[in-house]
Image (cartoon, rainbow, N blue to C red; front, side, top):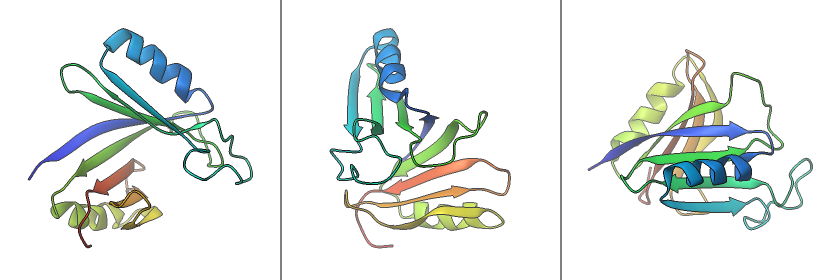
Length: 137
C-alpha cells in the first residue's frame, strides 16, 4: 500500500497560468479541471473558468497539484498545502491525527469523484489535503 506526498499550491486566479508555466519548465502531463466542469459555476465568487484542480505529473513521476482559491480565504504566505493521497486505510487515521488540536476545513467523507477526502489545518497551521481512493471510512 502506497502513500504519496505532494505539494498543493493555492493560487488566486492564476492557477492556469502558473501550472502551464511549470509544465513548460518541467514537461510531463498537465490536467486542468475548472469549477464550471465540476458543476460549481453558480457559486457566488467562483469563476467557472477558474481551476478547481490541476495536476502536473513530470516525466520522472513527480506530482505538483494546485487550484484557484476562489471563494475561499486567501492569505499571502498561506499558498502551499501538503497533499497525502493513496489507497492505504491508514490515511483515515492520519486525517484524524492531523485534526487533533487543529481545525477541519473540509470534513473527511466520500466525495463526488468517489474517494474519501478531507482538508485540515493542523495544530502548527499547516494545511493538509488527505485523499484516499475508494473504500469505506
